[in-house]
Length: 212
Image (cartoon, rainbow, N blue to C red):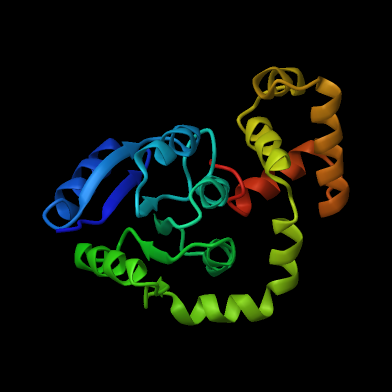
């Protein structure tokens, strides 16, 4: 009998263990990851049907990780399980290809039911915030459109700068020149109409474009 293969990603080990115990009676948990980069690199090798991931994760936030995973695993279903109740973030997650959005305050049974539904092709948003998310799509569409125009490379640069790395350190990690990092940084500032480095990092943290 076919069992849905699930990958879990969260930076809290105790939560990963609890989720694994919750899901294993019905699904095959084939892997767990505690940061975004490891998830993006390791998940495709496991060929999961569903990935349950958080938004705020070290090294790469869940939105960027999910966007990359959708490219390497086009058929995978993404379910965000997060403490983030911002309807703009939920709307952005769905726009980028998420199939489900739950809060960590949701009941465990809701996650099980969500996995069942997304495997069948449905999209599920917890009733705790559905109305706000629908409103967010309408009232904040222009803002979402602007922030989503950041490229993956720009988000990588933003993540490293938010972690306190210098432009030289970011360049070394990304294997590019410091001039390239500077180009991405100042292109983002111009695009977002931001005037200082501190304001850029604060914007990134406030909008969850990077992990805190």
